[in-house]
Image (cartoon, rainbow, N blue to C red):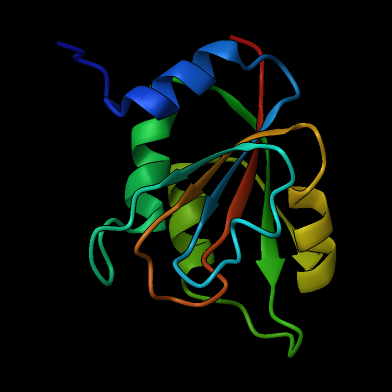
Length: 135
């Protein structure tokens, strides 16, 4: 039995194949995962509305990976979603790089995105693209 913070077998297998510079998307329940994530491994974790949240999944993943970069989908109206502050708390000292919605979709469809995780998150613009750092 695994004792790490993330115990999902599909996620753990894919993470074990990732290296420096590979990317992981953690997406809210509204994100079009199937059509906007290229050939990445897709894992659907949402079990009910709001369960699990993107931040819960991020926290679990941080127990097993180093992150060197975090990109978020910015709303087109210039507002800042509250979840961005939660991301910053979980990734202390890291500046979130904002990307326009359609550019974010393009970035998540690139070959470097190895794992895409859909959550039950209901907050909008609650998507984060992580670049894996060195161990």
